[in-house]
Amino acid sequence: MKIGDLAARTGLSVDTLRYYEKIGLIPAPLRDAGGRRVYDASILRWLQFLERLKATGMGIRDRLAYAGLRARGAETARERREMLERHRQKVAASLWEMQKTLELLDEKVETYRKIEAGEIEDPGALPAPRTAQGART
Image (cartoon, rainbow, N blue to C red; front, side, top):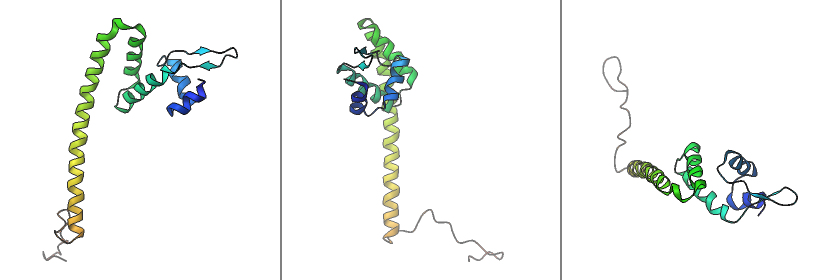
């Protein structure tokens, strides 16, 4: 498939695909008689995997390191597994934090629903300011 087709199928721009090729994140494709890039369908799965790694917070350096190991073949399987295990631990910790944040947001939303319904007072409301004599205004 041509680079435009690959861009359309992955949601990545043509410029991004060229950049990924330039830095070695994706292998250089074959070229047709006109010098245009021709990608094998297997690149789709690799790009999807790279985008998942990116979405989970793996930086470009680590993705490049992983791609370099992948290019060297089966001899790097252990290193790649260990790299993914370390990243998985980070993702799991991040998910735990996000879950706790989601629970807190749910509690806050429920509190505001109760305030709106008149069931409770706003616990975050500031008391009325006092006058110089100490009375509330």
